Amino acid sequence: MTAQGMQVYSVVVRATPEQLWEAITKPEFTVKYFYGIAIDSTWEAGSKYCGFTADGSEQHVDGEIVEATPPSKLVTTFRAMWAAGLAEEPYSRVSWEIEPAGEHLTKLTVVHDKLEAAPKTAASVAGGWNLVLDGMRSVVEADEPKAG
Image 1 (cartoon, one colour):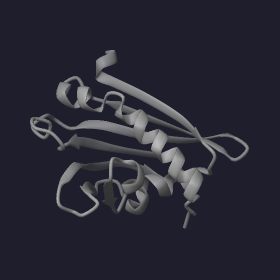
Image 2 (cartoon, one colour):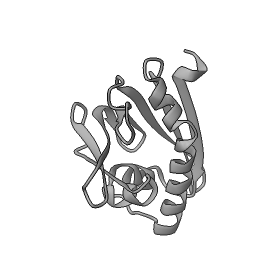
Image 3 (tube, helix red, strand yellow):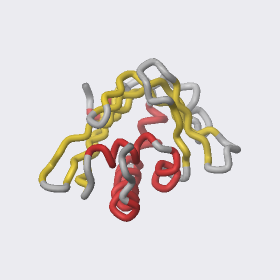
């Protein structure tokens, strides 16, 4: 796959895999680090997810859950809707891979791929995932969401 068809981002967080899973799948956390978007779903394979602004007035992302293996892996389709022309592109794919990285540390890797047919989306998200992951790290390390 070409570099423009795949983007890979990683961050190490002072948290458990369960805490990161909570941060990824709970809208009360996503709204704090994902550009103000509350992302909600049942997080079961085959279910839909959507991401709206905190006040619910604008939808910015949607997709389907491809795989959900808490607390280690979440794979979704992804469609950006925050700018003109993005929603017309085909869905891409986002994989969240969570793995222990030492005592009280967890590595989160986000792989955004299948972007070859979605060049506007690829350009729009380039670098944005770094901000999302840095924001998540700050939220998780400050709020310490509890699993369960």
